[in-house]
Image 1 (cartoon, rainbow, N blue to C red):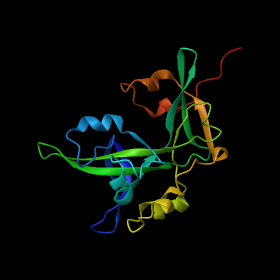
Image 2 (cartoon, rainbow, N blue to C red):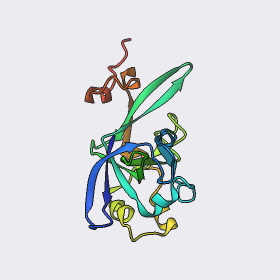
Image 3 (cartoon, rainbow, N blue to C red):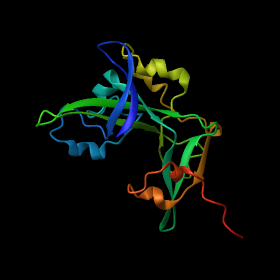
Amino acid sequence: MIPAAFQNRATGAREARLFRWGLVPSWARDLAIGNRLINAQAETAATKPAFRAAFRKRRCLILADGFYEWKKEGRYKQPFHIRLRDGHPLALAGLWEHWEGPEDTPIDSCTILTATPNMLLRPLHHRMAVILPASAYDRWLDLDVHEVERLQLLLRPYPAEAMTAYPVSTRVNSPAHDSSALGEPLPPASP
């Protein structure tokens, strides 16, 4: 479960709640599809069947203090924590859906939009989460904005100079470990 903010169509007010990470389209037969839809490419989300309705009607800001990527070094993968240099929280561009299961158990789920990486993340991964600046929040959440081109202008790599990435413990590789200490930098290697 991850926190996200969105605009409530009925009230017009902004709300925040926990969403299941891994978008489950309203037409899906079961939840399993969400396991493959944790991310959506910003360049094609408006046209892909799994994402296009949400792109037009259900956009959200996924709230985080940072995220992880893994750099492959031979057979080993070193995790890196990525965050804003100033330490402020991130608002990742996201899409959400409401799904009614066979047991009438409603599920609200979301996906994170990704773009080509900036210079900081390029050595780590071929994609990066779209981080929206505060100046873009209103347009992204505005349910009256339907023009795909206008929205896609917001979906670009965040400036590398405003971010930092550093290696962290491989303990982040296991969901059994859940602590804010996982985001702490590794101590410098001894000479």
